[in-house]
Image (tube, rainbow, N blue to C red; front, side, top):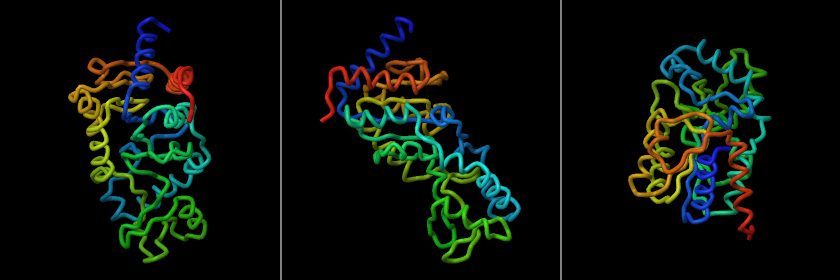
Length: 254
């Protein structure tokens, strides 16, 4: 580890100790570490117009979900996920914003999560509004003649996860709530997130413009690296447990 990297880590640990309201932003680097795809990526999902109007598109989509969803269902959180959860007990974590839609943060036990792009773990009926767990929907496909799930309430086959497909706006409440949380945090820690697309690309600058600290942790360079308080290039599942260990040296879990 270089002297510059060590300085950035030491500064981050001190800022974490001193912060009164910490917001995390995590991304797909944490998912990729455990072998999961980025299911919120627009290229992964079909155009919403084609999905609604063409049964074959819906059938192909659900065939793809049926093939890979068991990997999501069985996946366990990475050391980075676990370290962030542990920090909820060691310091003043307000919330965890995440670009990932795989629910790995939830599996740690955290209840402070805002899924910016929503989740693939639930399915929404666009006719009557009913929600179903994805596991149950896939189970129903075993007896389906069409390969397309139907709502148990209204029998519509317009069923999809609440993820935004190409042609749909991003989830409104999640984005608005994220902006609100950033207004009040004094330390923003970005871990393995994609800062190349809006609205997330503006998140670090929103915090910095208020004179507060921003730390970026990850293996990839981001457009905000030259402007933030500290950048730590490294595997999140190595860096985050290191920060937790340093916090434990001077803190006791109450």
